[in-house]
Image (cartoon, rainbow, N blue to C red; front, top):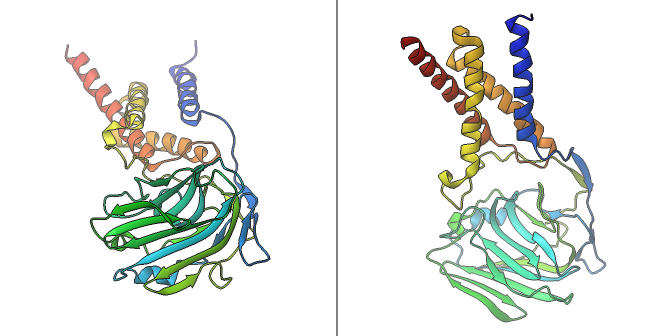
Length: 324
């Protein structure tokens, strides 16, 4: 008859495999990949995006750090789409840091123009967003202007006002001066837009910056895409306690703590078992980088706490059983 040690290992291995299976599902493998930039300059000095492409400033624009006392900022784009049903929203123009934090983004969602602006009352992603319906229903050139003032946000298309929103205060103190400006995509894992931009400029209190100037914008040859770490995966648009992931990650690791307590008793402290839980969680989160999942420090913390609660509950139960 096998000793208890091998039996424990035979039980523990499928237990661990079960955690990895649940944590890594679905199993579509997405290794890091090199993406060639499909953004090109046109003969008239504009930009053409035939596929996944980006034109971006090599560093945050200098004018971003001087917006605190600005009385008016206007973004002007003249663009046309290649596809009236791009989604994401697909980025035409953005001043952002990845896909969750932005000062301003103009994107295409279906045939609508989506405008996200960080402003009083919005979150760090510039939502709630504003929409201009039906703008991209054709492949014609359209002039888009976004005007920002301390008390107002106005969007015009082809000289017609489509959005006019009062603001409770200036948006510029909310803006982060460390974000880069990009067109066609945003790194990492942006939503690529296909089409052409022949004019892109920014007017700051009467001073105009030509964003298409080669001195302002660069076209990298390509880049490596690696699934980003979602550092704190709690949705900002709802209270944290309404996220089902909070409870799945916490309660899901309680059985792990209970099992280790039953197997090893007092040979392992609560801290040791929590460290084992953290190691298991870290292995799952690390492997998620290569899968269509979002590795998260939130999950790591909750898994570790769940393992600790599991061993604590198991100890209380064994003490109660012993006293009876």
